[in-house]
Length: 127
Image 1 (cartoon, one colour):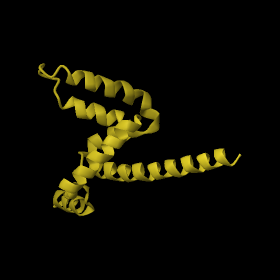
Image 2: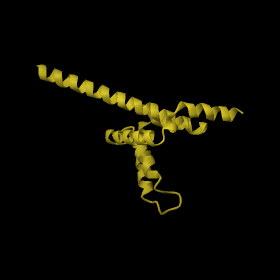
Image 3: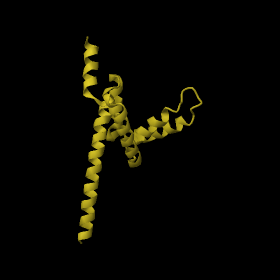
Image 4: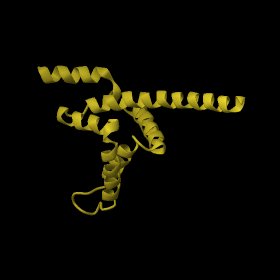
């Protein structure tokens, strides 16, 4: 009787740790979204919402398949990371890879995540 309880506690602790880690990713992704032009921010936020899951899955798969047609003018290899990023919202293995990529970007380009740059950008636009 005590074993299922300990397994349950272990799973709960493990999922709360994972949720905390992915919440940190959400914070970093939100900062990156804020760097997009304003007319692109709304659709990207909607695409990340839970209600858009049935749009994300086919869109991610289509982007990955489109990257295989990179020799055509409209398609390109740029579609592969975009498709993987879209699917990362729903696939845990890709979510872990997204976390690693965000960690790498944060080490290499920390100014991409800083609030200070956003304030400077906002001041430049108003003047």
